[in-house]
Image 1 (cartoon, rainbow, N blue to C red):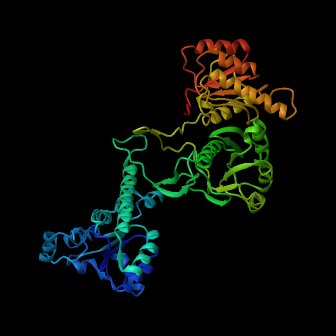
Image 2: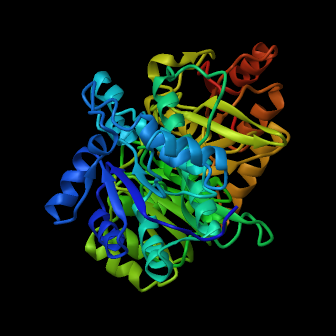
Image 3: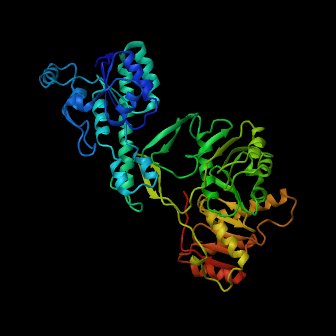
Length: 524
């Protein structure tokens, strides 16, 4: 391969015109001929830059409403021939094909078109054909041709052109790597759009664009980056802008995503406090400030150094309360100027504003890496309501218990399994997460509630008179009996154990109400 290659002719065909004129002007300063098509050529002419239409260069007009512009031998031959092959040189000379040394192409905005809600036919017409072909041809022949696919690459290219009038092999190879990733992502977005949302394809392609490098992963010896899924419009960490604070870490982002997905489950003003990807306090109330007090009461020790999510614009009063303890991240759909002014005093606290709250019922895909592969599933968008509940005990829950049961089960969905959640007054009062035994989760949640009560100067445990939720069925009565001993008066669980009758009998013996949901929420 040749290291330095001068550029004498460039082909420009871009949908995104950002920086186009500046790039073209740099080419003109180096006496580089510019070939262009349609809107790109028109934009350059308006800027006073001389261009040659591709149709004039090839002698073949654009046809089929512009579907065929550059799919001709005069273009692809000029890109693909090997400059070090006597046979290739003879062929292009015989056919009158002129070399093309630089290809500047970005593609029809397919993902943006889909995200806008455009009709099917409009989306189809925004599937680029000629662009990917040009990009792949130039990337394949990067030994001799440079390919640019993103306006963010223009400044470095202009700098190199200004210094040398051409490109180095290192530059061309780096651009080729980006180019193949670009077309792969583009095709993956099309494939995902065509796939019915409830089905999994024979080939699953995962593509993301790197938003930022992270200092490290879960631990300092691990490398990490934050990638945004191509075409994703779900509100959350991917849509959020950071308005203050230190750079977010891998663990910050993971915890923040968990917190925001959880808080989205609730319609009333709600607060979720997360530590190590598990909620340690969740509450709904008339105001965010009241919800914060209730959420913090659940486990004030674990809340220290946690991540906070709210489902309303953050107000000044709530910000003042949150700022009283050490908090790593706050994520909200928005924040008032008063709230931002309060938090600005905490220079290291990261404030992320996501713009909106995600829809908990929205379908989507979730995945997890394995050694040598990955698992894919539809995201857990299941939600229970009153109509789904089956009362299985002699006593039915009261209205207040019913509200708390639904609240607790929605929290349970976001707690690592085996999960047990005690709640009272639409606030968690004890959470047991990630234990190998469900009965241990019930006991740990009750123990943490006792500790929180003591910290608040109360003699009675917070779980007294609470309801309890389990993310999966009780395999034995012992888990339920532990919850009853902690003071729970009503229970919500999926049901489905071969010992359901034994568990129901234990609830009836204690005068406890129990409802089955028929829906499990394992979270591993």
